[in-house]
Image 1 (cartoon, rainbow, N blue to C red):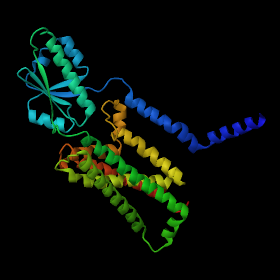
Image 2: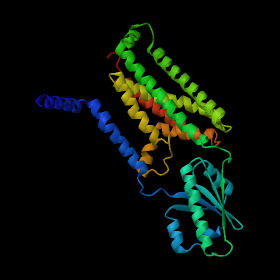
Image 3: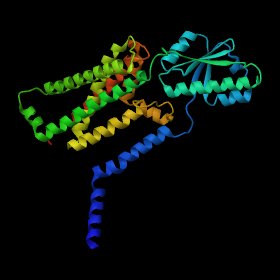
Image 4: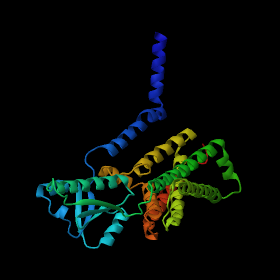
Length: 352
């Protein structure tokens, strides 16, 4: 019994004193609890921003109490230019455009965000049903017609591919740089490279070149498989994905260099890279929409490079936007790469 007690005490102390084990066993899962708690907390979904073009009797003739209740979930703004409003829906700036054609309430929405699309359809079906209650037993006063602003033949793969491709690029660039840097330092290869008649810039450019080639290969495989096997339909501006992939690779390569410069072991580098990239993927919409996330989580998300990479690729691959959609994301990604590279250069070590 004494031996059992002593062994148990020694193992418990070993667990508590091992910071890495404590982190992975307690703090890392706790971080995901906070993350998913924020994403899934039902404290009210954000309002749908909707443009109303012209007179819409189903909305204009609503009782004041019903109108007040409706405005708890949607924000209706009058619009005069229907074509402009539809472009805003297509670009993700509006949830829907509402018009009336005879006794039909026409709802134009985007399928790019399937959660928002479902909310739009459900909300306006409820409005039509409420308006028709007054005509119970007779001919319904209104019917609902929903129209996608995109080609209705588009499949969900359109909206899944950009996020997963962004995540794949982030994983490859970050892990490749972090793990290789630590492995080379532990094996003494970095020291030998430093003493060899090879410029440091050549070493860096080689690492960048390999990461870029891998990222371009990933892009070709992703798009080829998605188009050939799952029916992905690329917009005419899809080649703009290439500069985004290059800038994204540089951004995440710099994160990997920073993680590798700080870490002392390969296990530590893998752990740190996981700690950075995996939560970022959830917070950047790589796996599911952040539409229902609280404002504080949305604010954090907008600070992450992967969010800007994902949204820009969605804009040019699916929404058909042009060069104007990539300038800001490119600047953010390259700026992020410059800052992280500068920090990495300050903490970089040639020896273990």
